[in-house]
Image (cartoon, rainbow, N blue to C red; front, side, top):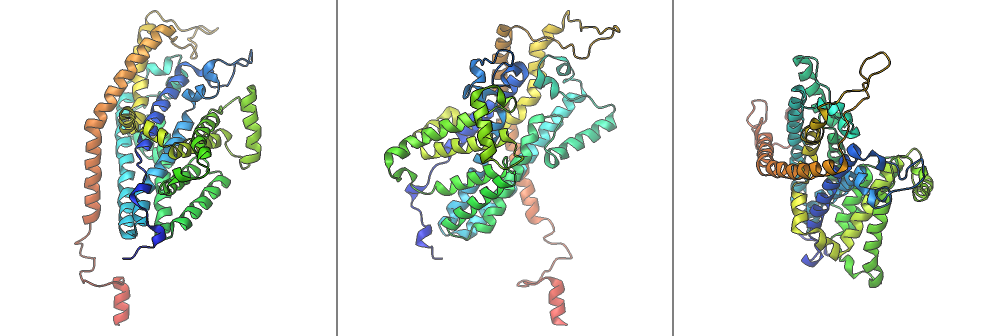
Length: 456
């Protein structure tokens, strides 16, 4: 097989992707931080206090990223497009298009089930906890996110089974899961994997330049058709994967391209800070809101578009900077990256159970709900949050426990999910091979019905 010289890439042009693992670990950690803030610091949601117009430190740009969960989910999607496209593109550039298609097909099959199986297991565990009343305390506490995501027990066993089936399917059909709310992001990840598969399936035989232009067109199409959460991020990641095979550090003028990555990351994080609500309360967010009217399509979700655009700029900046890539390849960050998916899956149910009991169980002793005028308990009278010192100590203990559980999940559960995926893959390649209705004649290229028609 001959290879077009234009598609050949020497080893020095290949870029390691370990930085993506490090960045994914940081993103997972910030998602947990955002849910913690949504539970205990909802005043960080707006960029300022409406009464005074003043902002505290963690309401300001950059610092408020601790509560901007959607920005970190956008980074997950960009990295998904980048990592999933990397190996097939590398093989395609070497001229091994058959191997690229095999890698694409195998990777697409395995990644789907490595999402589905762990998510289903976590949903079942959370469902069991819910039916045994573990989340009931969470429905009474003065912590917005914990209270809003703590599901009610089912009325009966049959209703519980129906509810479980509904949530298992709802995760992948509607992006909703009452037993583990953060699983809403799995549907965009699932769709994103399909985008990568279908795009590369169509473009794997094309030249790198044509492929790059096609991905840019798909990015623009996603931007214009309000697919700002999945499409733009996935195609941006694929574009980054394509660009990673070029020696971008040799771009001229070199001084500008040494500074550019840091400017991109800084601007990207600034844009990611755009608040989901109350953008008109501060000058910086009002300016971004005005800019959005000119650069985003009509009816776009401005906060999600800014989160996606910022995430893409951050990833591009990191990829252009050897220093930032090395920094994100630190062993501690790589470890965080290795546990990022289990951390994302596990943290919600543990926060609504273990964290709730650690923080609020002592506060239930002596707690009396406020009574309404008719003498009945006020349903909006919640168990109060303890003082900040006590809360801080409990949060530290909980996060240590959370990381321990996630590490054990990674060590013991993930391999079993991998084995289950491998078993399903083996089954998919053997099921029906020797069925009576399949053709046994070797070399038969046409469907059996067509062959019989030709022989009549």
